[in-house]
Image: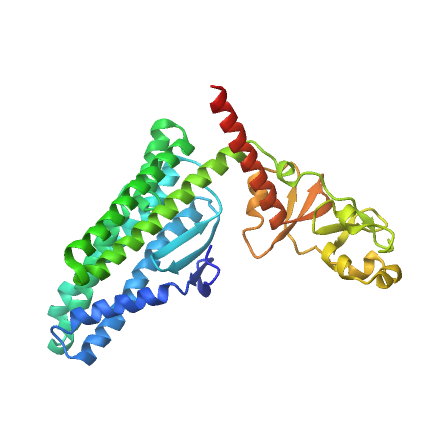
Length: 386
């Protein structure tokens, strides 16, 4: 999702990454803080206050996301990473909650953390004037006071009932509990998110129309947030459709027919790699004991000169696959998809414990696309018939 993100650190087993899109947003936040602080302070002091405030602001966002991540891990969910990006932060998970209660708590803990941060900054702002020297108290109190209000506003905004905001997930949990249908609850929450997104887009357009150039920045900001929320809500709707499509399916339903294996000492000039791979990019290679020894890439076979093929065997181009994750043919199809969530773009396929072949992420994605297309065609046919 965030191909340009770089890893910053690891907290309690959760990777924290920073996407480059955060940098211009951080610059805008620092500029906003500096512009506000310079009204009552000299520029050097205002810039220092802005820098400290900006760092603490993003630390608050990280705390918000850590609340989601650690609570999700506490409830047995697989949390991959936290990414800080243009619109704040996102916690990436590879599993869904097993119950409405878990869904509610994981969603609600983020805004709760923001409210706690707001309260703590409020206390610092209040007590700074009592405990610190006069020259230090005013800047500390002002920075902490602003951060208190910012965190409270973020908490309230996040609780607006529309996915993908936390409030949308809280709404989804409540609807899931009432309707006993998670996918229907997801669709309703996502539609609410689209309504919210459309409202923000209209708000941005209206701000520009009314305020002109003075309202350009704020209008564009609301417009960008609205478009992002619309895109994210659409992604949730697509995920709901995919979940419905995959319900009850096994890994073999996406993997399909496996390619024919070749022997380690099989000469490369006696078989057609395209025919052996049967449309796949990797040909399985088995040893004398019949166990999977590795794979040969069809592209490497195609690039070989005919003379080289005659002089070489599958052993010479063998790629070992012991490091790849394993998925059984009869495993839930979601386990197959989740296997690609790490750095691997291929997985070993086994049946009864014996590895049979290796399939790539691209092949599974192609099969998933074909399945979705078939599902849409079947739905359209059903609607036409009715």
